[in-house]
Length: 195
Image (spheres, rainbow, N blue to C red):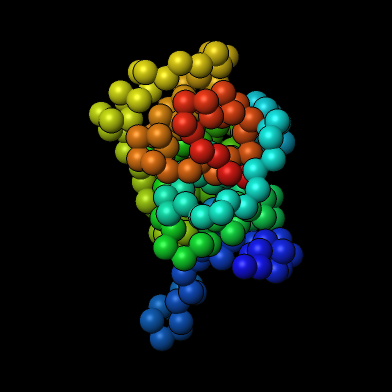
C-alpha cells in the first residue's frame, strides 16, 4: 500500500468546514488565526526536543489528543505541524480532542502576556472548537486516577501539564499529537505519541 505521506508535500490541515455561502450567511465566519493577536517568540520555549522520530503508524489512531502547542500551530500556522500530524488529524474517522488543561494553559499564557487574542476567551475557544470540529476532553475521575498513579521523573514545571495530558490520553486510549519531548518520559507507561 503506498504511503499517504509520500503521496504529497506537506499541506496545511484541512479539518475545516466549508465557508458559509452568501445565501446562508451574510458574514463569513472568521478564520481562527484572525482571532489571534500578538504572540511572543518565547511562547513554547519550554518544549524539549524529541529524541525519537515518530513515523507513520501501520494503523492510524481513531482518537487523537492535541497538546497545547499543536493546537496553537493548527490555529496560527498549520505548516508548523509535522506531516505525520497533518495526515493523522485529517484521517477519515478520526476524532480530535483538546483537553480542558490545554485551554487553561493557553489562558495562563495570555495572563503572562505571551499570547494575545482579539476576542474574549470563550468566543476564541468556541470558534476554534467549531471550526476544526474538535471535542473538549474534560477532567474526569478515570484520568485523575491515571494521573495519580503515573510515576515519572519529570521536572516540576513539566509534571502538571504533561502529566495531565498523558493521563487523559492513557485514560481514553488516545494517541497524543505533540512536538514536545517531555512526553517521552511517559512512553514506558503506555503513552503513544505522534509527530
